[in-house]
Length: 176
Image (cartoon, rainbow, N blue to C red; front, side):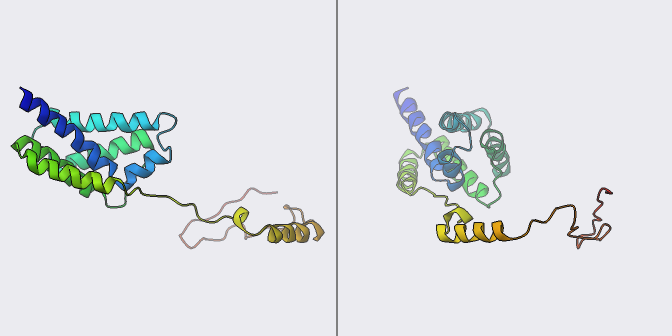
C-alpha cells in the first residue's frame, strides 16, 4: 500500500511538471487569462487532467489533445493553435504510461528533466505603441492637428458607395 501511495504521489508531480513547462499554459496563467481566479483554475486543471487519465483507460493522443484544448478554451479563453498540443499530450501520455507500467525510476527522471525546464518561463512582450514613442513627437502631432482646419466627417466619403472589395464583398452604406 505504501508503494502505491508513493507511486501515486509521483504521478501527481508528473502532470504539473508537464503543464508548467508548456509555454501556452504559462502565458495564460502568468498573464491572468483565467481572470481573478486564474491560479486556482491552473491548479484545478492539473487535478482534472490527472483525474481524466485515471477515469479513462487506453486514452489516445487526439482525445487528450481535445480535452486539454477544451479546458484551455473554457477556463483561460485561449485557443491553442501553435502546434504545441500534440507535444503536451504525448508528454502527459508518457508520464501516465510510465506510472501504469511501474517504471518509477524512469518517471522520476522524466519529472526531474521537466522541472528543470519549468524554470524557463515564457514571456510575452507587447508591441510598441504610439504612447511608447518620444513625447516630442506626440506634441508635434498634437500641434499640427490643432492648427489644421477642421473637416466634417459628413463632407468626405472615403470610398464609393457600391465599390466591390477585393474579397468579393459589397459595401452598403446608409444614404444621407
